[in-house]
Image (cartoon, rainbow, N blue to C red; front, top):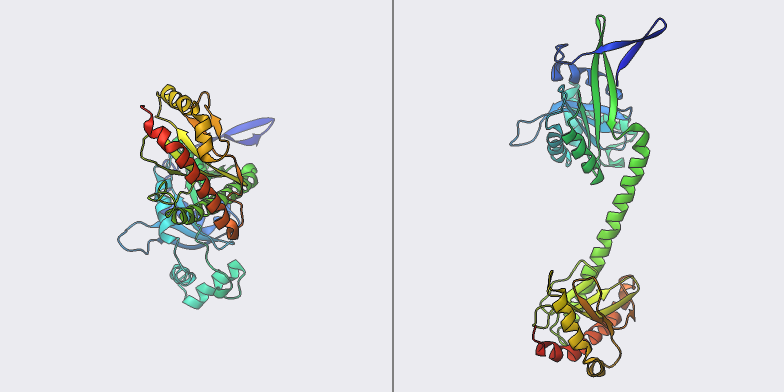
Length: 365
């Protein structure tokens, strides 16, 4: 966006320039100016040190290492170019490198930066954080990233937007120099996330993190439930005896003939067992033909199973399904009730296997 000065009855555009034209360097000038007043990037920041590179097997250095009031380290990477180069990748490496820093290491780095002793640096950090002592809190392992450049390429902005959706916290600030007579003015704008959308982005990120937490907890439930069911079923059926616990709401087994999957299915409050018939893409007609040949034996099959089955030809799908009636109990069932539910599922699978195995093995497909 252009910068204007009020001139008489109108506006006079202030000429844009570049840091290169103004002979302003990244380290000697831009880094020095931001170090002197980091609040232009956020009033919750404290500069801990500059040119930080205290790690083995690397000669790379962080332009500015900062701290925010939530005890998160903040990596500030500065470029004077109009495309930003590959600064986002560089900053991510730096963030990973400092993510395990301790408060004592941070105080030591700050002491060297201010040319003071360790107690003085520690006191400055504690005062900024509002802690009485270092045991009152702990540095977060979440590291923020701030990218500062004359401008950003589409590659960088696209990457940053995607990385933020994955849970990272990256801000992009554009510093655009202008010349007004003998003075150089710098227009500093936050491009990502847009300031007016920051609250929304924060809420959206929190929502995504909660969704991931719930999904992770659900996968853990499935894994433990299926692990117990596999062990419990081995003395009664070999359908899933050699399977590993699944993280999904189903567990697939085999009876020795391709195209016929025997599945345990666990929904929120209900569960079932099924035989899913599919020979892959392009062979849906073969699956339907096998289904109909089994359906022609429905009366005999259901007699062996000991009850009615649900026969679904699933029009438009790759396969067909023969399943047991839904039974009460699912992945939301209290863990102390799992053994009963698992026994009922195993019993249903044994009966389904007994009812379908011989007719399936007799099919020519």
